[in-house]
Length: 261
Length: 273
Image 1 (cartoon, rainbow over the protein chains, first blue to last red):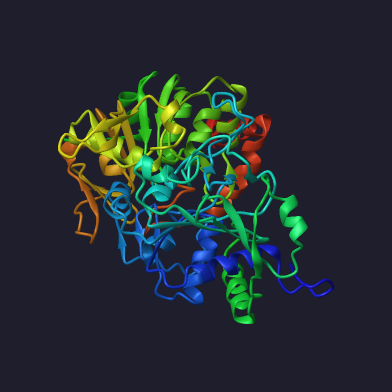
Image 2 (cartoon, rainbow over the protein chains, first blue to last red; image 1 turned 90 degrees about the horizontal axis):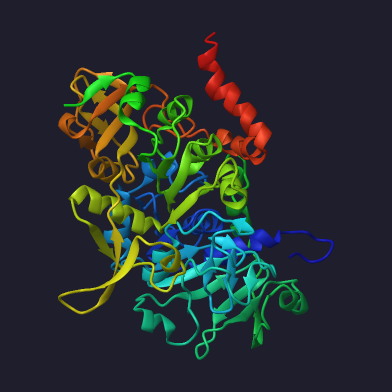
């Protein structure tokens, strides 16, 4: 969101820049395709040049010069430190908890950070919308030390309860991950195009901790499918810098077709 | 020893109606030419297994070849939905499609168990997800040493696995490199296997990091240059991302899809130019 009359950046750019900043200090990131991949590649071009990007196609330490359209583009293999098989990437690298951060997106995300990418509608056999499904996400959400989720902030996406639990966030709430034996900490950060949500330390409920500049709080509440709690005081995300915007625009412009959402 | 055959001969000899067939290749080296040959030969009632169904299974499903799909991620990578897959699941068109749905880690381990001659594989996965309630080939087991609860996935042992590789030699030893996905496991897990290749050479010079499948571990090899398009073959051609984007409009509508099927897959054979 930009100041009225002065469109300086789009809501998507604000989201991607915020997500890229959140990767600062991480060593390794298991990257989902789409919004996470754009943000992770921006991070490598801005604050986190040494971040090791890991894609489920088995590419470890990929340094793509252009944004990949799929998680298995040739550019990822050609620029990677290592290319391993799919069984190896999941069994040896993800499963033991070697990877700092899993970076995912969602078709639905609920107040406890659970992710649905399988079906819209309660009847699995006859869904209203058949979505692509799990991919690597269930085990990324379970086994990475921490998880970040990047989604556009819409009422149909941020829902009270997901129609289908594809990947577990905090399950039903406090203690549920431990009871399930999930070893990672779960979704510690949700970055949207309106702000940032973090789990409440007591209730594990996603809470608005930051709002992007120019966004009205009432609009965020309206676009959230549960009664959203708001941190006091509510911080405002620093606006994108010119350097960040230039890097992001160069990244998307250099990529055939442009739209990777 | 692998037999060197034509693609049409290989598909005719190795794939029967009703088979469990895996066409593997993780974004890279997807065996499109072999998939199109399955459509041309009119195979029916197949159980199609593949981690990422991709455009190739969208085509096979739309063409009515499949009764069931075993998979873990069914989208058009970076583009959106697989519309023929969705139409089959949401509206039974052109026929109902039974789903057996997994995660990537689960599918990879299912093939690894099959390749290892084991009835199941063990992993940390699926726990707390709704996949457990809908997929009968996943179960919770107890570790005999620690008492810890873990997840078991049943071995996946296709009747036939088909993959595409860069090269084979004249004896049928196969060499592939770049993103190698789960192809080695899928071939070794299968009862029969067909490998299509970009070229057949006298001598396979060693490649760093290459997967080599000895001739005696493969049933048949067929020459199919360009056989992974619009996917890619590292060292030969790039992924045709525009073609993946164009598939969205072709596949969205049944008639547009049927026109494509007739024009691009069936007609070139009926009336060779």
